[in-house]
Image 1 (cartoon, one colour):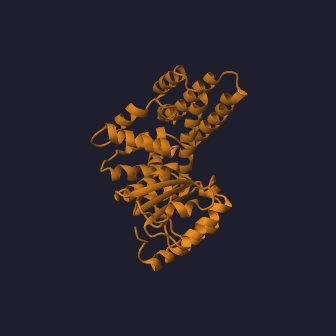
Image 2 (tube, one colour):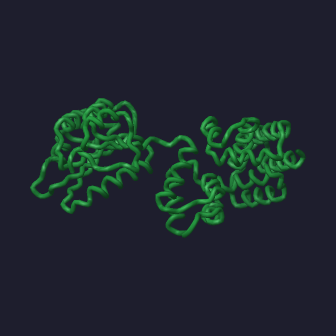
Image 3 (cartoon, rainbow, N blue to C red):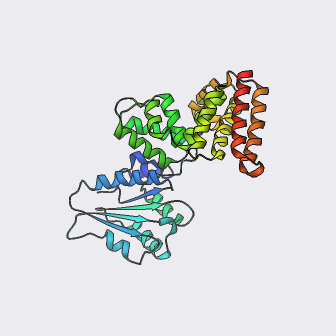
Length: 338
């Protein structure tokens, strides 16, 4: 496992994080960031590439409980293995002994070894990262995905890599159910890919994840905003009867109405607005469709009703169930009236 070729090119691009999809072995490679799904996927790619060598020897180290000399010993040439893989966890919390040994190792690596360092973020170990950058070794991007748009892009890329398609309504349903957490979203994608064939449809997503609190809340919100009061109340009462708390149900309605308010009166393509408003393109399209039966006055009244209901279900009212039922009724009525 020789050092990366084109050292000058690597140095020139040293500040650019490499996507996890391009993670590969190098004498020293850093997985940089705290998004556990991306850390695991990047590590899996590197480990799989290393395991092509049958004589591979793998060692796991913890930078927090590290003892001086461990890294040099683990990565040193061996009589019994011609390839070595050393995986080091918790580099962002490393002690001085590890930092000193790692800095020394970067200056004189074993070209037949891969030392994989996992750094979740923060200033600790920044001197080491700078030395690794200057030496031209890669850093893999595993930064936390904070926006739903980024998580949606991740989902689309995963389906594309699997050579599967997902219909837009199915993607919207999947993001509503699992999109708040990348680990849950990734697990859901893996299950759908494993258990189904052909295009991913909304019915498939609903069968697997339609019972989640998030999905149930958005179904209630969709029906209420469309003015389908009977359907909205039926969904709401079923959710409440099966133990769903009123708070996330109100939150789902609040999110939908606020998204509509952000899109209302703003021109531009879904892609442009998604970037400006930090939303996913499908959210822009959905909000625009929802707004067809609303005007400014109706939306303002609904937002005031949401604010009141939010206070009531969080302790300001005597009956949270009544508060959310009244909210759904009022939102449905506003949609029908205007």
